[in-house]
Image (cartoon, rainbow, N blue to C red; front, top):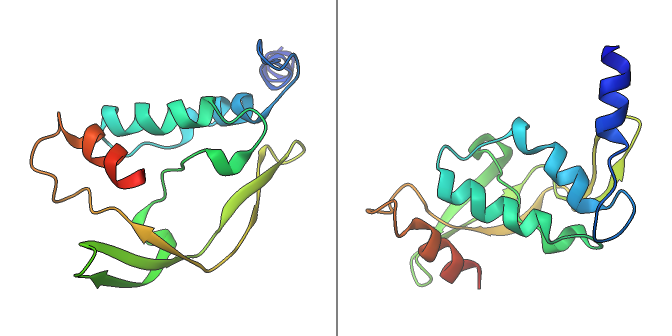
Length: 130
């Protein structure tokens, strides 16, 4: 019975695409991560639910321990670091996770821990992403 329920979840199809697209894979993974802030989680999840055809359109929550060589760039008031894993480029149905590319790539980081007001955090994040 457990296997049947698991299979039904895995076989869920997107109402927009009419097949199992990236948005479905991302949605199935919501329970496996959190930033600890419901506004940030919602913002990231909304980008993931919009990424029907291209995984690069989606944001991901990346735990701090997945970065190295972190440096503050004062001119831009942000951080730069290398991301150990890289971005998801396609889904691996067998292992139920994303296949990644760009391991150890350099990325810009938003410093969310210094945001003063959690109500403004979504706006700050949106502005920095744009």
